[in-house]
Image (tube, rainbow, N blue to C red; front, side):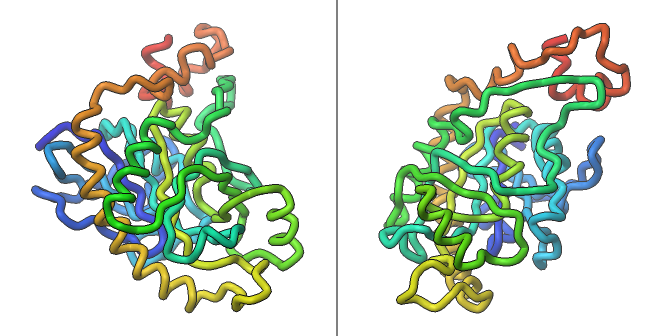
Length: 288
């Protein structure tokens, strides 16, 4: 089997990945607990792929309940260098219509109670996060999505709310005044943790609704979301088949994601607790 390079986190509606050769399941233990589900390993267009259903197969885990640290750590332990996160989102713009795809370039955090770092407890790390999505991987995701024939938008600010409830009308109106473009519940803390793990991370966001700001449209409902999810899931899987050969030809990373921790560890090595060194050796050993 090929070395694992590409990780795919399937969001709402995407609970498996078609076309993988030599597919097998592995269950990975991490210092942070268990990932959302077993991870499916296989090959696609000559590269190793690891697929994880973010909410678990059967959609069992709410956004606030996700163990994102375990998910990202597990993918890192399997050799993943690129993560494409497939996410459902609401649109805050008229021209970002349901069933369109958005590849965002910025993010705004409105979550409240989610562990968003691997570090702490005697180990202080401050990563740069001015560009929360890897620009090079995002460009490849954009190109792959365009090849499906779908309407695809480049760039945009993705606001992440806690959930699981949808927005109030007041919240939705204020978010639009802030200039955000799409809204969802799961890209954080994934994007932050992927950067700490020195993994390139990009989101392929699939619009399911207009949130609740659009007076001419019905407010978002689960039925509406599910209907559009089914259509979006097929497009997402097709885009991933186009993405794999692009990743295969860019195995050598030239972005800054692969060295995000190089100047980020502030704690003196001799002051880091041995238990933290052990638990996080996968991430920090090369810098100690």
